Image (cartoon, rainbow, N blue to C red; front, side, top):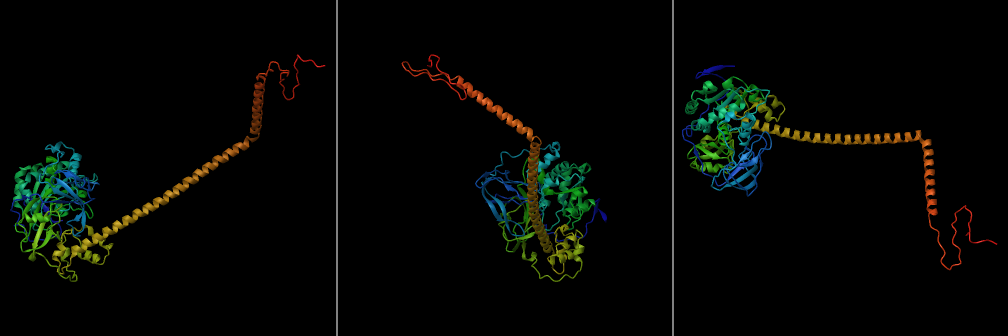
Length: 561
């Protein structure tokens, strides 16, 4: 591993990388400006990596600025908040800014122009050092903060690294290496205090002492703004470091390698080597959430390119249509040829400007014809090795291309396909004009689809096995109950056979006793019955009681001759 000292700090190199034309001069020296409210906001429920947010509002409901409108259904997810006050006019499928061009679930809000904050908005605190790290993570999660460098990974998850890998270093990413994009540059210049305070809050939440802020050397004004705000705190744990301007230094793994010399393992995470990396925009958003109680409802977006009249950086509400951003940047010029979300290396073309921005949108590039590389008929790979030399992850792009082209999705994973960050360096230098990144994305998509199908089949198999197990268990339990009942019946029969004779005699004697008792009761009743008397003047003798088997008695007043 090679290392060198740059501006007094020891730095390391990552493999490959490119020196690209920057095209940042048209926007980096212009102050950012807020946008007026658009006529409507379209808020995608898929603003982040992980599970989509779930709506908690209804069509026709009035919402306040900062009010929760969609909750996070799982750990790797993030809630969504209303960027302004207004009325929910629709909840349904709408076109989204995505390479597929497919629609997705959205909440549409029509602003009322009042921009009124939610009365139940959480209270912020400046005494964040008094907060428990778990409380900070919960507030960050409730604010819907995700990584603003492009990946949009839920920040609260990154603030809770596994206990098995203790974290000792926090890296704040201010490199912003891709051409044209300057939103992080302007943020560091204009809101240096928010960036540093956010870094301190994250440091407290992680329980680390070492904070490294990496800034490319093409941003001297941003570096000076942070240094002025820092007031010599480098001895207290926050260190500002200039790094060489090489694309893609702004990649998470690449910046960690440059600043610390540590290398994130294949299919691993920065926390595996004791590092957490956050973007400067994410740090500022954490500050707004903890100190002011504000959820993530807006962000700085670079609107640039020769196809827009007044390039610059704007503070745009999440869900604002791209057409609104362009209209308030002077509109399109006659040179506008292609609309791209993101930079020229990792961005993707859009088919319309009616699509909304999302939390991960950092740039809207309106390119002119000269800036658009028309698709060229690919030629066969000549195995020149330029792609391998340029790859910042030290992969073998040509092998990945061959396996992706052949749809050999088993072997392509042996070459660490999922370590590819899709930076585009390989395609940029390819003399055969092969769309290498497109092949890698295609292979990843197919593998994910296969894994989803496999998971679906595994769930069906597990359900079937569970059903068979349940039926077998019920059959076994029924057999056990029958056997138990049969054993109890056999025991009764056996006991009856043992004491059967004596029991019969006792039963017969008992029947005799019951019969005699019944007969004695009947005789007593007859004796107690009164005798009938003859009517006066009657010559008939009174009736004489008799009983079966007894002698006949006559009236004593009557004599026989």
